[in-house]
Length: 77
Image (cartoon, rainbow, N blue to C red; front, side, top):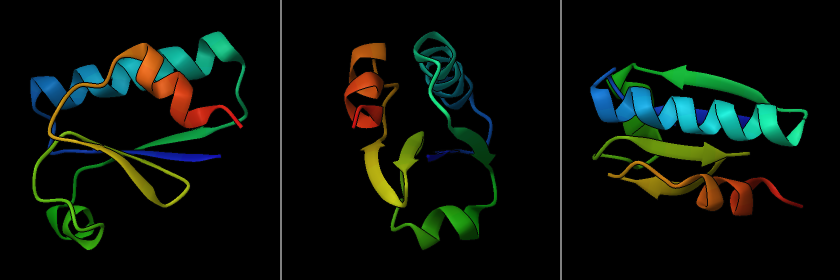
């Protein structure tokens, strides 16, 4: 599974990355978490408000820090 956290590095972006990494660690999920800070790459996902979370190419959240429960729903198969 490929998870991307999109954002320039603001506090909310950092918190989003922590939440995502915590869920991956707690669930033992085989996933790669990547932080994307390049604004052109972020815009390439159609995202213009950060933080955002992309799971396997699908935008799941934009403009807010997701809860652990939200992330768990996105990554469960």
